[in-house]
Amino acid sequence: MPLLRRCNPLARLTPPPPSSHARRLTTFRPGDRVLLRPTKVDRNTTYASPILTKPLNPSHRIDTPRGRIEHNEIVGKGVRDVVRTGVKKSGDGSPSASRNGTEYRLHEVKLEEYVRLTRRLVTPLYPQDVQVIVGLMDLHPEPARWGEDENAGERLEILEAGTGHGTLTLYLSRAIHAANPPMPRHLQAVKTESSEEEADDTAIDAWKSTRRAIIHSVEISAKHSVHAEGVVKGFRHGIYTHNVAFHVDSVTPFIDSQQSSRKNGDQPFLSHAFLDLPGTETHLAAVASALRTDGSLIVFCPSITQIMACLATVKEDSLPLELEKVLELGVNGGTAGREWDLRAVKPRVRQQPDAGAEPSVLGEGGESGVESDMREDSGVDSSPSEKTEQSAKIADDDDGGWEMICRPKVGELVVGGGFLGVFRKHHLLRKQDEVGI
Image (cartoon, rainbow, N blue to C red; front, top):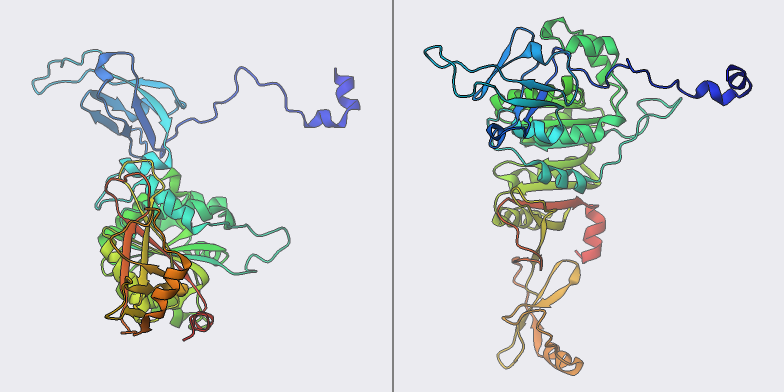
C-alpha cells in the first residue's frame, strides 16, 4: 500500500481514515451560547420550553423551574450531548417533587432560534417575515477577486431605519457577509473579550474602510439601538457585527449628514432601503434622493392605509419611485405574503348625462379599468362595438386628483401581520417622458 501511494500523486490528497479519538466537530467553550432542548424520556418534559443560555462562564449557573444546571457541566461537552438538572431545593431546604431532575440536550444556536429567544425591548419582526424582506432585496454580494483592488466597484450599502430588536439587522448582515474581507484574527479575538477598551480601534477602523458591503442601521431611540447592537454582538461571538454601522438618529437628518460628508456630495449611495417607523411617508423624499437607480425601497406598515399614504406622497410630490407590489405578511404562519392590488389612479374621463357607461379611470402607465359593483371574474364582457359606443360618449375632464384602488388579490387567507410596500427607484426624467409630463 505505501508503494501504491507513492506511485499515485492523488493519493497524497486523500485524507487518512478517521481516528476513533478524533476531536468532536463542535465542543462548547466559555463564551459560547447554547440552546438546551428538553428530551422526551419522561413526562416531566412535555411542557418544558427550550432555554437559551447566556455566554458560558464556569462560575455561572442556570436556574430553571425544573432544577439547576451549572455552566461547568456544559463546557467541554459537544452538540447533542445531554445534561441533567440537579435536585431543586424548596425554600426550607427540602427536595422538591423534581427529585430526578430533567434532561436537556445541547444544541448549537440557530439564527432563527436566537432572535426568538433573546430578551426583547420591542416587538421584533418574525424570522419568516424577515426572510421575505431579505429575499425581496435580491442580494448577490461578491467578494473581491484575486489581485483585484478591494475598493474597486460600487460598495453595497443598505439602509435599515428602525433597528428595533435587531432581527432584520442580523439577517441582512448574514446576507452580505461574504462580500467583506475577513477581519484579522487578532483583532477579532480582542473585540470579543469582555473588555471592549482593549480593542485596537485604529486597526478596526482601517479594516472597516475596506468593506465592500455595509448596513446602516438607524434608530431614533438610543436605548433600543444599544440593545439591538448587543443582540447582534451576542450571536456566535459577533460574527456579523462588523458589517453593521449603528446610528442613533432620525432618517432624514442621517441621510443629509451622509451626503454632506461624502466626496461625491449629493450622489446616491444606497443600493436598498428598508423603513419600519412611524410617519414613513415624511422620509420618502430623503430616501429617494439617496437611493441609486433601480434600487429597492421596502416600507413595513401595520396598516394598509399607511402604505396608501406612502403612495399618495410619491404621487403628490412626484418622487422617482414606482410601487412594484404590496404584500400582506402573516403572524406565525409559513407564508411568503399575500399580494395586494394597490394603485393610484387619476380620473381622466367622466360620464356624460346621457351616457350609460360606468365612469372610467386611468391608472399608472395608461392602464384603464372600470370600477363597478360587478366582479372582475364574473365572465361578463362588453362587445367591441359596445365599448366603442361608450367611449364616444365620454369626454375628458381631469380634476387633477388621485384616487386609490386597494383590494387583496385572490389567494388564501392570511391572519394578522403587517404590510410591505416595495418601491423601485426609476430615472425621473425618463419616467416623465413615458407618461407625457
